[in-house]
Image (cartoon, rainbow, N blue to C red; front, top):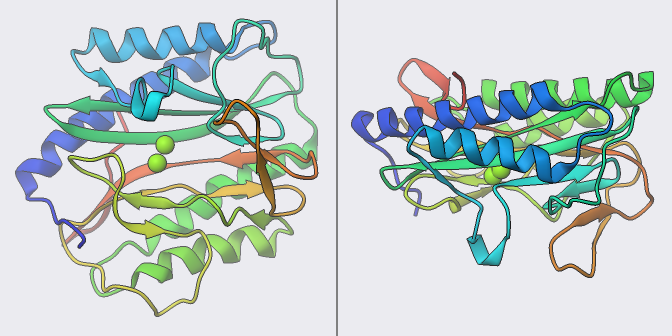
Length: 249
Ligand code: MG
Ligand code: MG
């Protein structure tokens, strides 16, 4: 069942989203050659806790940190590490969430570490554009897989591939609620979108093949061919006035 939220609930989720967005912005501003992913994690944790919110990922199924930090060919769920120092030309996908009064915000962005090569820059731009295309379909009267198909079309038209194993999700009092929101699928199918639905839409787009593998740490997901991957995510609400992004400041 897709749990629809009242406007009062969406207001709380807007606050969770605002704090999540601030954490992501401050992490992004700190990204530079030489910084470690543990230092980025500390920035996110301080930002969320100083705002009186709770880091959503820390302790989630035993995840040890506030952010997921996934570098280059790491797709999602990378664990911050003191030994992981970012280098000029890397990209780092940062995923972060915050809880306010029991409601979740969830957002992700891939940041360049200094200058990056033009093809990697294109991967980031296309992934961001695929998210925007998906969000644009999150309207009353559309179907769930209209979102999926829009994301897929942007990514594949650009020559990139869509990760199949990990998907977006409903969000509210749980970080992962129904429905699952694949980043691929047939337009015009799936549940009808209704006012009050809140989704985390999160394309994970690979420069090379779509296939991924999981590392021995039980968390980190990598591309199977070693090519780069990008990840952009917003929490959005379906409203009478169209899609509203909640994970903004
Ligand atoms: Mg996320
Ligand atoms: Mg998510």
